Image (cartoon, rainbow, N blue to C red; front, side, top):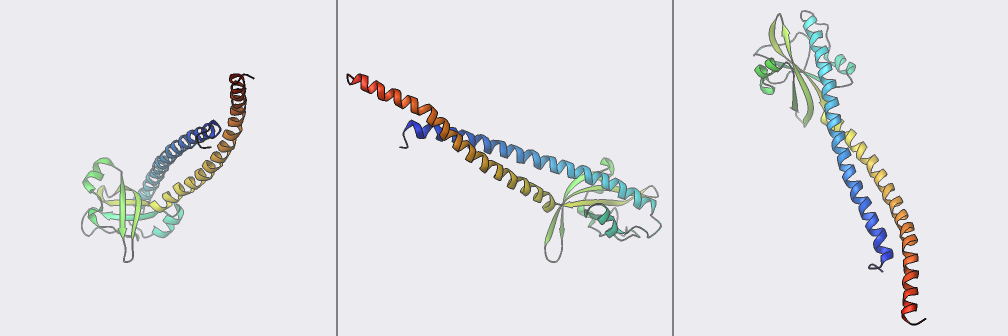
Length: 204
C-alpha cells in the first residue's frame, strides 16, 4: 500500500505543497516583523519630534501633561533622560537614568533608536524606543524618549501567525484532496495498462 504508485504520487505532491507553504510562511512572517518594526520606528520618530517641539515651546510653563500626551499618541510611553545631574523638567515626565543613552552620541546623530528596558518593583518592561535631544535656551538639556511596548508589536506577529496557520491548514487539506483526485486520474489508466500488459504476456 505505502509503496504503491497511488500512494506515492499524492504523498509527494502533498509534501511539496507543505514544504513550499512552510518556506512561504516563514518568509512572510520575517517580512512582516521587519515591516512592523520599521513602521513603529517611523511612528515613534514623528511623535518624538512633535513632543520635543512642544516641550521646548512650553519650557517655562507647567502646561504640558505627560499622561495626556501618552493618550494623544496612542498609549506610547514618554520618558525623560537628563543630560547632566540635576536636570529636571517643570512638566512631569518619568525620568530614566543618565546612562540609559549616550547623550554625546545622540547630540551628533539627532535621533537614535534603542531597545529600552525599564525595571519596576515587580517586573521589567521591554520597549522599542526613539530618543531625541531636547534643547532649552540653546543648551542640550536632555533627551525625550518615546517608547512602544514590544509586547504590542509581538501581538501583531502572533495574530499574523494564527491567520497564516489557518490558511496553511486549509491549503494542506485542499492540496491533499487534489492530490488524491489527480493520483487516481493518473494511476487508474496506468494500472489498467499494466494489467493489460500482464494479460498479453500471459498469452491472452
